[in-house]
Structure formats: structure tokens, C-alpha cells
Picture 1 (cartoon, rainbow, N blue to C red):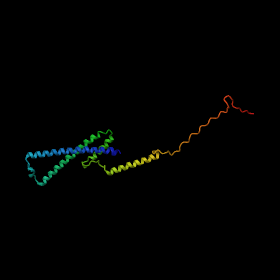
Picture 2 (picture 1 turned 120 degrees about the vertical axis):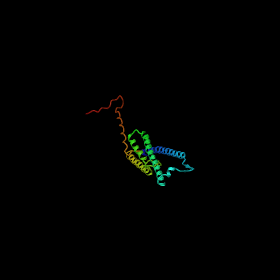
Picture 3 (picture 1 turned 180 degrees about the horizontal axis):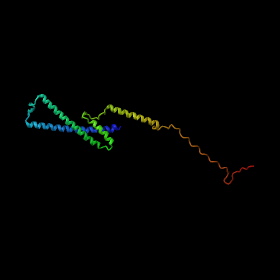
Length: 198
């Protein structure tokens, strides 16, 4: 129950914050590069209507293959910047969330979980924590169900939760009080009869 109600939501909070910052920074950097590119090409007069003609591309050896190589190089450069941002923001968000825990063991466990969910091959589109899916939920629900059943068996074995009568026999009623011995004197002034021994 702690795993489902506390740990998983906290890891999901990390993923949401990390994802938001990465997308925002990617957008800022990409937007800034595009703005700089258009300003430079427009200022240089390389646009003819909607057609862009860069004079240095015509002088590169290799023709179209060199141009494709430059395009791939730009994509790889942006990819490197993107993954650098992912790593940097993951460390930042992780430190912020780990500061909320005073228990060092909790910090170590959550640090490993945050690191696993921010690996380079983890897509930003995945909102669920790594390893948390329908199959895991079903297994966890089965564990809780089996545990509750076992606890109920223990309760039925050693306690009386239903409030039924105890199996132990009731204690015997107290013995009747002895009746007081009647006074043998006939009246208050008379003495009791004495038995004489011959």
C-alpha cells in the first residue's frame, strides 16, 4: 500500500517536473537557434522569396552528400544538447525532491529510482514510472489480497472478532451461601439446654 500510495506518486512527481523543464529548455534553445538562423540569413540576403540559397553550400565538395552530412551533424549536435539538458535537469529535480526526506535510506532508494527513470533511453512521453504497469498492479493487488486473507485466518484462529460466545465453558456458579445456624435458644432470656453426661 505504501508503494502504490506514496512511492509511485512521488516518482511520478519527479518525472512530471523533469519532463516539463526539459521540454521548456529544449523549446527555448531550439527557438533561439531558429531565430538566430533566420535573422542571419535575412540580414545576409540569402532569401529569394521563399527560397533559401546559401552561397557557401555550392562551393562544398561532395555536393548533396556533403549537405546531408552537415544536416546530420546539426541533428547530432542538437541531440547532444538535448541529452545534456536531460541529465542536468534530472540532477536538479532529484536534489530538490530528495531534500524533502530526512531518512538517508529513503534518499538512497529514491535517488536510484529517479536515476532509473531519467536514463537516456527513457522517452519523455512516458508518464508512468519504469516497471509500473498493469501487470505490476495486478501482482501487487494479489499480494495485498493474500496478506489480508492470511491475517483474517490468524484472527479467526487466535481471537474472537465476530463477537460469538466463547468456546471455553462458563465458570461454575458460585456455591450457595451457607444458611446461618438457627439459634437453639427458645427465647432471649432462656439458656440453651445443656446435655448432662451420666
